[in-house]
Image 1 (spheres, rainbow, N blue to C red):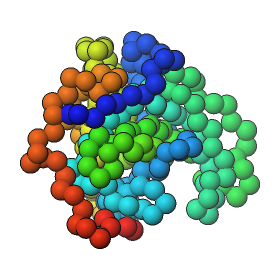
Image 2: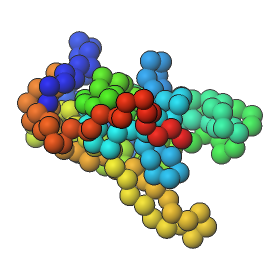
Image 3: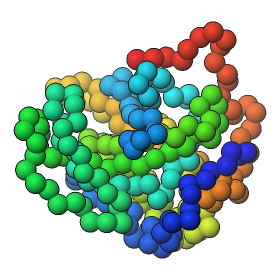
Image 4: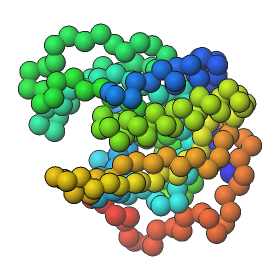
Length: 214
C-alpha cells in the first residue's frame, strides 16, 4: 500500500490509553473539513453534499484516535443540537433537549476515515451513527482496534472495506446495516501494509461519467 496515513500524532494519547477508551464506548446509545459518510436506505455508501457513491473496492484507514461519543438532537431533518467528545472523556452532561427535537437527545458514536486508493484517494470523511445497527458496527470495530492495540501496538490503524448486511423488518422491509471489514493493520504512517495488487485496485470511472449520485 503506497498511501501514507498521517493523523498528526504529536498530541495523540498512548495506544494503551486508546485501548481502554475504545472499550468504554456505550453501545446502547463532521468536523469542519470532512465530508460526511453514510449509508443510504438502499444500502449504498455515499459521501458529501452530492451523495457520491463510494467505490466498491476502496480501502479506508480508520483513525483510531478519532472515535467520539455524545448526543445529537434532530428536528425535521435538521440538527438542533450536538454534544460530542473524545471517547477518552466521559459522556457530556445534558440539559433539556432543544425545542422541536423529535426524539430528544440520542446517543451518537463517530469516527474519521481516510481513503487510501482509487478516485477518492486522500479524502477524509466522518461517519457517525445513532441507529442500533450503526452503533453496533462501530462498537465491533472499536473493540477490534482495542484488541489489536494491546496485542500489536505498533500497528493500531485498521484498513477497512465498507460493506453492508441486512435484515427484514416486519414494518419497514429490508434494513441495511454497515460493516467495516478489516483487511490490514498499519502504523500511524501507513507502513507495513501489503501493496494493493493491480487486479484488486478499483477501475477508474469512465471518462465523462460521474459515479452514482443519490
